[in-house]
Amino acid sequence: MHTGSEPKKALSAYGMRLALSLGGFVVFAALALWGLLLPDRTDVMVVLGLVSAVIAVVALVDTAVVVRKMRRDGSQRPV
Image (cartoon, rainbow, N blue to C red):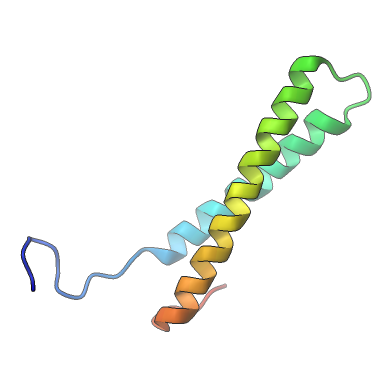
């Protein structure tokens, strides 16, 4: 039943979500590597690297979810 002002056949912005999650993965994975592999790292750099690694993993999981939903819906193809 259509109850609001939304379109009857609204589409999710899977392409934008895929681009943002892949971009976030790349940025935070690089930041994690920089923070954890720097030869003269400090405690702050290690914490930054660990937090960035967690965010990168979340972005990677989100990427997998988006690709799965895109394939299930069939309306849009993943890159």
